[in-house]
Length: 398
Image 1 (cartoon, rainbow, N blue to C red):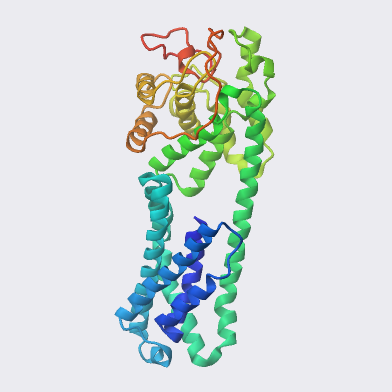
Image 2 (image 1 turned 90 degrees about the vertical axis):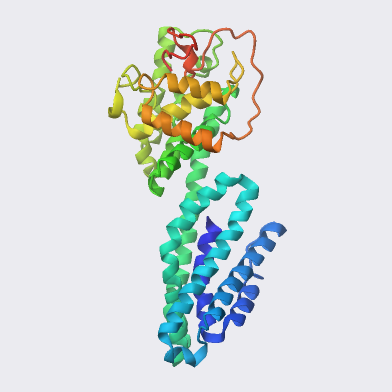
């Protein structure tokens, strides 16, 4: 979260002010700094200002409570200064995290707070210990008489780091825009699958977090989920919208969409890792899928994850020939098809996260089922198969 990273950089300066001019002065500096903000809605600017001041105040109280030295006294009490600045830095970050958690709790519920604590706060816990020492170093250099030089030595690298962070975030936004452009093209072909790619990306993200994937792998997985059907751009719209059963040549065109997806994204560097997932997301655990007939763990890990969430979203969404199934009904189908269509361990993990956090897909306006469409045509729907059984879950070509 950008706000969390921003306060981490600001905290170095605030700790230095604790040392140079005292805790009270640091709160004043935080209040003054909050007056200069990028354009944003008033409520957001008010929150950002309160967040910075309250965080600085939390650190100030901790520094004062430990009797942290101020000014030239620091040079005679280095051990005490190290302890006080470290605790103050931790307190500052804790107050900041608490405020963000409160907002996330209101916006996204307990799951949003849990994800923030796990993937932001936990990953920055160790670096926080270094902010106090860096702020103390800045204060000691300043008190020692270097003044302007101290500012260059300490603030210079921090400003460079902040600039690099802003460049990284700009790149992330550009990447996201690229992905959205792909998806918009896909969704113009079929109103019934609007929002499907975003929901699959959200679902694989939930499963990836349950599996505790590293952040870079998590991002790659979510990209793969978003782009898994991008190859349908190359499938004639007449086939995708056909209200009846497809003939063999039309099914062959459908089965080509994973390979076409790889062709489309093959020259985009930041999507290099998602290609195998896009190519193999229609493979089945028992080897009856396509395009390569891979089975078991020979199917790429991300492709096995996407296959589960892809089918789950299809079943829980309205289609032209049927209303959406309930989450409970769909979970029963996924469990039934463990070992045949899906990796059993990944199904168990996905069911666990669904039962714990629920499923709250983004609201997408879809047409009501069309009674004239009596033949299933959604190739991600597990009810398409010829085997069917009691639940009709055995799938044919997807």
